[in-house]
Image (cartoon, rainbow, N blue to C red):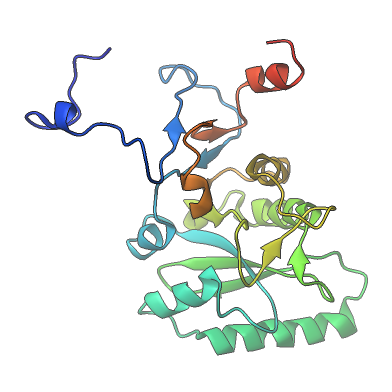
Length: 233
């Protein structure tokens, strides 16, 4: 055990890990003195996305949008919180509707989802436009959307650092799998990673209360997890 204290005074003795209430068990992995050199996604357990965006910790954020109703999504909150924004929730939704109408006439063979850009001066929003005729995103949408976004930010340091919502637990733009259920967090990370994404992701608040399951702060996860699932641990 480390001799370095976390808190001043008797804080380490007095502030014990809670046995009830929301909590996660974060497990360190790898050697911090060694550079892996591989692409990874950093998982921001316990951090508040809106606070971090408003405080300017990111240049770009990724979220979802549709052309009918985004009132309960992250997009609407950001447009209210960023003081320099000339966009409103209604104007952003109208833009998505106008864009949808335009591509339906001129780009019928293009593959969705499309990426809409909203520049709020201090923050760039890259919003995945929910595919036409659907009430939700799929993992294939996440893969294709993040593949496009990865190309949009490649070599563009002015668009970094970048963060994303997890799309899990969403109200306005839900993410469902082939069984019409929300996929696992790992499945979402895998789709983003395969799409070339290398940035930060904020887990849904519902996952802040999984005390019996160890979590990692980075994806890809350790190879040992695969071996454990295969019964060879």
